[in-house]
Every structure is written in structure tokens, then in C-alpha cells.
Length: 195
Image 1 (cartoon, rainbow, N blue to C red):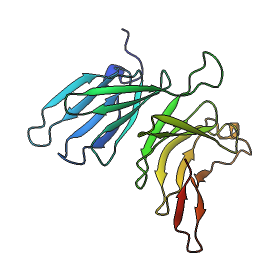
Image 2: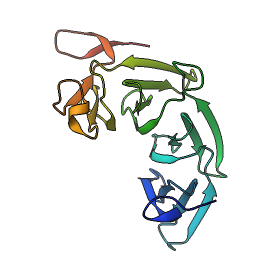
Image 3: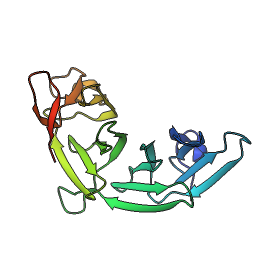
């Protein structure tokens, strides 16, 4: 295995804090490793990543770690206690061309997993209890979105940064927000979640 990138195989990429024990979890992008730092002893434990090219990761409220597999178009669900994992293949839109999930976020209300995807101008929503994806097209070509976050009223937002910037349709970098709820009352409160 030949080291890649300016930092070789040591490059940490994603990071999050376990919501229950405060341990720090990180991904090593080119080494295909996931690590845990004990908050008391600072002892490091590393595991083989269940997906290739681990980039970004986040815990849900139940303490499950979700991780993108950029190199092969996968989403991983990891139970930190024992490091048991389940891997989900993201939908392909052409035979043999895997999506490239860059980042993910856990929706604070629904706990659905939202992934951005760099190659096909789409956002992916994974509904854990149904183990299925819902795919949303982004209204611009060349978006190359970078991160996922959520507004207080439940909208899903991502930033984009193609290189070079003129590769984006219209040539102006933007923040895109998607409202996954189709039914709100007159106050703006969600009455029905789109599934």
C-alpha cells in the first residue's frame, strides 16, 4: 500500500464527539481507519474502516456513528461498542459509476442521515428505520457540495465549492437549502414529513 496525499497515511479527515461518553472519533482518509480517543486516558484505539475513503462522520442521538465511504459510494452505520458495522450501497445512476459521498449530517429532528454527493449534483437522504435512500436533484450543475447542516425549522443546507468556481452553473458559489417537509401550517410548523 503506497501512501497518498501530502500527509501520507496519517491524514485525519472527519471527526465527531460521542454524545454519551465524550470520546473523540476520527477517520483517517487514506489509511481507511477509524479511531477513538478515550476522553480520560487519551488512549487511541484504531479500527479498520468498513468503507473505503472514510471522510466525514457524525453520531446520531442514540450514539450510532455514521460514516461516508467516498471511494466506493457507501454509507456505514457503526455501533461504537464492539465496532459492529452495517454498510449500505448508495444508489447508482449509471452502471459502474458509484456516487462520491463527501459529507453527511444527522437531521436533528428526524434523525435521517443526509449526504451530499460530488459527482452527480444530488443530495441523498437515508432513512435508518426503513434502510432506504431518497434522492433529491440539486437545481444547478457542477455544485460539488462540501458539507451538510440544518436550520432550526428543519431545512437541509449545503455549501458548494467546485474548483474552479466557474465550473458551477452560473459561476457564483452559493449555499443551497432544501425543505424536506411539504406540509406546514400557517405558522410554518411541520405537520407532515415527506417520506
